Image (tube, rainbow, N blue to C red; front, side, top):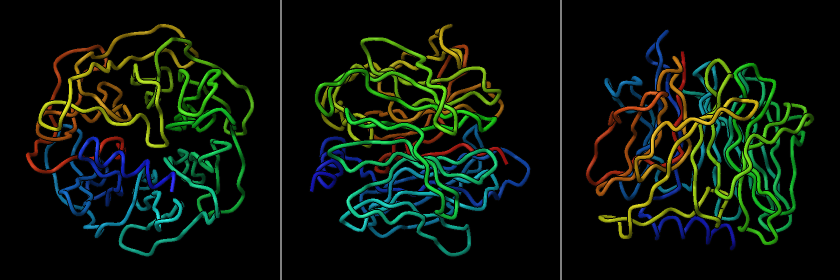
Amino acid sequence: MRLRNHVLTAVMVAGLLATAIGGASASFQGQDTVSFVRYDGADTRIFEMRPNGTEEHKVFGPTKGSFVYASAMAPDGRRVAFSASDGIQFDLFVKRIGGGTKQITDTPGRNEYSPMWSPDGELVVFMETDEVTYSAIVRRDADGTRRREIHRTEADYLLFPSVSPDGQRVLFSAPRGAPLRGDGNYDLMTKTIDGTGRRWLTETPTNEIAGDWSPDGDRVAFLVETFTKMTPFGREPALRPGLGGPVIEQPVYSIRSEGGGKRLITDKPGINGRVMYTPDGKRVMFSRLTSESMDLFSTPVGGGVLKRLTETTKTYNAFDLFQILPT
């Protein structure tokens, strides 16, 4: 029931359904591709395009109302990992493009979210929680075997895992001293893929979430939130004109992957969801809530003019549910 309430809250508040599969068919062979999810009020579909916003086409869908959330394309471009609910709990699945689907977790009383792949495609790293007593960043072999915890907390949710380009460390957002679930400030932490070598990258009164490694592993880009109420889907989506509610500012920054050297990338309002580098490392991409929809944008890593990559009127490009894949 508690999980169901999180999903329904996201739907009612933002007009967005957190039900999507992300992935691409790698049809741009040898070239970079961006896959993302589009929700039309009833179904979700998967699209891909080039990182400059051109040559958009559908890859997969519709999903016919399934609760599907937080997906990622494997490095080989042939498999998609995603989290899906049967109405009771969320488990992880891996779908082969053009082929079958394999369930890789089946954990009564627990939910798995936000899968991300290791660079060699051998591991899936994700967040696991029972929604009440603990949250953990966990890794499994891509076939579902050999579970291992990387980090665990009883205080609050751990959010948005991301694996470094060399496969050695995992970045995620973790609470510092939260007395109650959903409260407290989130900072960026990294650990080795084996769960050792804890390193805090930030320590601020705001929330640093939704981070991604630069392709060379030297920097981390992330979203700064002033909200303190967090769910497994990140913060509860903000309201704004056209979708109801005020405009809010959510700047994107980057720091060195060992901490320090903070730089502002953009402070445009309405940015939501995971921040991701393009494969060439020259731009970052994110979802941005406009008065009509949730669309994808990019901007240079040194700051500059936003480039709108998708443009819709009655369709939402789901936030935090897209993946950039160098093929």
